[in-house]
Image (cartoon, rainbow, N blue to C red; front, side):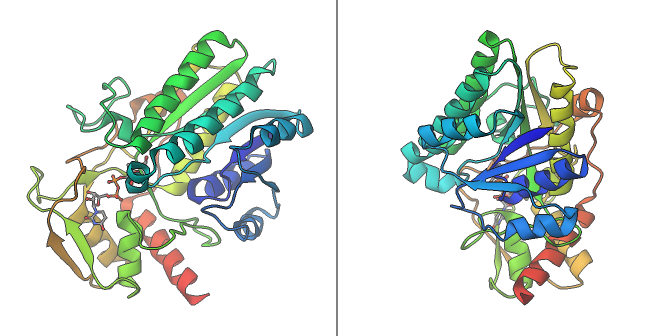
Length: 339
Ligand code: WQD
């Protein structure tokens, strides 16, 4: 069965391609390589023994999207990762984010609406909850006003899909609300490749551990948490990738009564910034150079998932511990720097 993975050369996309191939799916990747390298294809092949079909397409080009679906009429499902994801950049360039993240979504949904039956998985984010009133966060928690155009594209993306599903009988969709993905494939053939200075905590930690960054700034230790630093739900990217496969299988087997559903994808466990640093020090045996600085604008205090719905409905649970995920991130960082 043929599945299109947009953004399939990216961090979460590439790990999902691997898990799809493990389950016997035939994968076609579309990526514009704006934030990813074609060499990722070799990493995927080294793990699965099979190189997926790859087409370099900018999804903002509607005629190219239409032509792609004409060439690949047998595509039965789409996992749509392709999107811009830098929160700060989205504030500077809102229209770029609306075009990249929502324009392309509309084009793909238009193509899928032409089919008698199609399955669609959307990369959403826990960012839609903002600072939730209760922890852990359930899918019923209210969606809060977005802090950035990036966050807005995830909220609006979900609404666009929900509205389309209401009037498109053959379309089945799931939005997965990711918490904080980290780590790399245990084979260290694929992993995260941030361009420039990492904005996210874990790659910044591993780069500091390697001496590429001098020091990690911990953004605030005066939050109302046990150690004063912010709490997040860090999920191993392989666990996250597997969630996509089970979500897709649910849609393909038409086990869903509603044709649009949302699921939290996290571990259910919150970890503070200092706990993440301690995890790094445990698995690497290195001391991390860090200092406490002022809070970062826009950070929420705490976000971790209630995963009951994904556990019960999808039969999926995150398996890896923070230390296992951290070890894979560290092994990957060491490999990338050696090569
Ligand atoms: C984690 C914690 C920081 C860097 C991410 C994505 C965002 C959205 C939600 C996708 C926070 C602290 C970080 C550093 C630090 N995802 N930190 N020093 O803020 O949860 O946001 O998930 O839709 O796009 O970016 O993740 O990794 O940036 O930060 O102290 O140098 O680490 O304050 O508490 P965040 P993050």
